[in-house]
Length: 293
Image 1 (cartoon, rainbow, N blue to C red):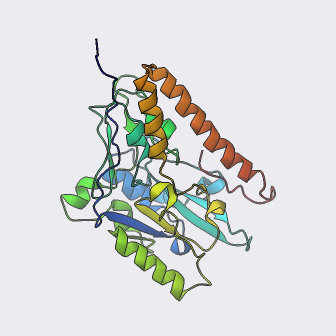
Image 2: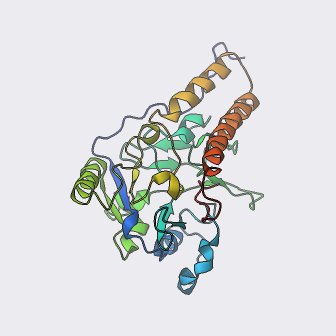
Image 3: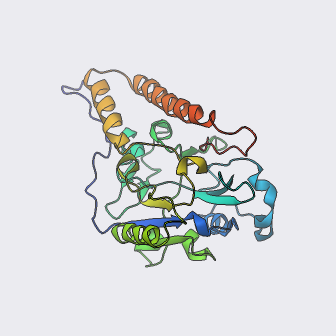
């Protein structure tokens, strides 16, 4: 019998390296070739697809989201001011500075590395899937088709490839348009500001990911409002503060984990409702530009 309140093995506020890694995505350069999808699958040992299939345009007929077999996907959006033009946007784990997945995890299966990536340890995971509910970007995916040893899947930021081999993430390495720039986050932010200042007519004056939910390792530049490109409108407050305060309060009063699951589910419903409310104001005659679901 425990003589003190149970405390979850959540990650808490990580000690972030000021020189940590990041990725800057310039969506104005993306042509939708999807080579990043192919390289990601190959680098992570996921089911591969023929290179010839990358040029199939029908894949853009519906919004896609990362899943257990695809850590990254590219979606196509109609330019809100130029209906004859498309904008392509790559989606993957954002590797938040204050990750809600790590905060919600009861056993410490998720960990924010000081160098930037949010890593997952399948050996610790108990399959509760709180991470999936807590993530404001709805990224972690579960292997529902694996009945015996299912795990949670998401972008790894090619952690071993970067730190152990001195390379860069596979998606950035293969990109023919240099859409993605891999480097130190502080330097990337300055590079993004320089691009906006040099080409104010080309970019909206904002860097997505600089402040969202406390900041993310992946950051975006775009020529159209981010909410029109499937990127959620989120405040600068880290979700981690909410998930940890809820989690600690529940266990302090010995409320079972099912209570946490239900409450986190309610939070996810609120995020989804806000997103759907925004999508209902869009032009119904235009291709749907909603957040990934």
